[in-house]
Length: 120
Length: 107
Image (cartoon, rainbow over all chains, first blue to last red; front, top):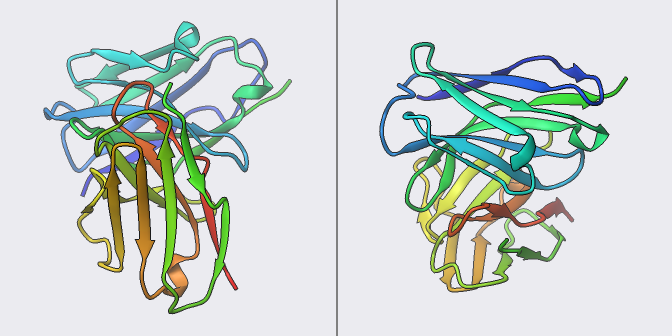
C-alpha cells in the first residue's frame, strides 16, 4: 500500500517561499508509469492542480503558477518537493501530494494534506 | 484551460436513494474523466477513472458513464458514509482541472 506524507512549515510570511516535501512509502518513487503531483485546495473551495514531476525529473506545471513553482525529486530519499515563491494570502490552502497514473491521468493515492497559512 | 462544471452544487437525499451527479467539460475530453469523493477534513479518494472504471475497493453502488463532454456519477442505494463532496477531474490536457464539487447531504 503506497502512502504519501507531506511535511514542511505550516506558516509562511508574505513574499517568502513555501516549501513542502512529500515522503513516499510502500513503493518506489522511481517506478515507471507514475507522476508525482502537488494539488491544493483553498479553504472551503475546490481543487487546483499545481504540477507534477516524473522519476526522471521531467516537470509539468499549471501555467497559472508556473513562474513561481519548482518541483523537484530525490529518488535516493523516495521523496519529492514543492517550492512556491513570492507567496501571498491567496496561497493559503491545504496542500496535497498525490500519485498520478499516466494515461488517463488520475490521482490514485493522496497524502493527508497540510494546511499552509500565509500571514505575517 | 478546460472548465469542468458540476451540477447540482448540492444535493439532499436519504439513505437508500439513488442519486446522479453530472459533470460537463467545456470541450471534448473523450473518456479522460475521473471522480473523487472527499469527506470533511480528509483527502479526496479516487472512485472512478476513465469515466466508468471502478477503482479497486470502491463499492459497486458507484458507477460512472459518459464520453465527450457529458458525464455522470450515479450512487445507488445510498449509505450513510456516502454523504460527502464529489469532484470530477479531467485528465485530457494540462492543466488538469476539477469541477467545483457537489455536496451530497442527508435529507
